[in-house]
Length: 238
Image (tube, rainbow, N blue to C red; front, side, top):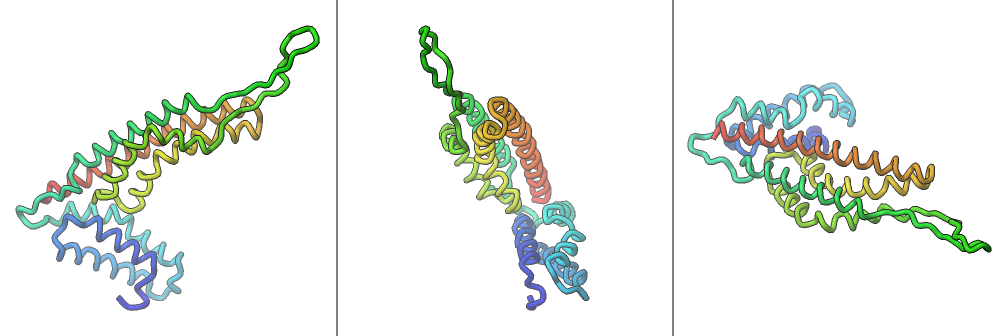
């Protein structure tokens, strides 16, 4: 590869594509990667090869996952070649179950954290008068939220790390999904309280739950379905 073809974005793209093509015969894999490489170089001819130029050329090719899926659909692997264990459908299914359990435990534990604490004093007639009211909670409660979910989350992270059905970026999203939801749940209520007082706690908690539950479930579903589709493509060519 000449100096003009070693732009970090191109290298990263080709490395990701090569990893996604693990189930294809090495010669066929090299042919696909080289074809993409040549296409990108052709698109970059006459340009200054800036980051913007490279991104435009890669966008023209399409996501590495789409290129890999097309390659799996059109290029059979050698007859009798077994489907790699890291590309079997049980793996994304197991990841979905483990991540789902971890997220559920985070949400259940969330209800036990954060509270309003009132300070009261007695008046001259003996009645108690609330003189101060504070919300006790912080983003560091995310650590407590992760304690219960930790075993399931760790197992999911290990499986995601060894799986060959997701790109590097997709793996990163899956690995930070549960901790990210924990930070969101523990961080928005105190932020809301700091901004608008008591009502901000409830608003922040409501938004956090909706985003963590709805957004987390959506991201997990999309990435697991994508992995299952790739697994079926590998199985069909095996």
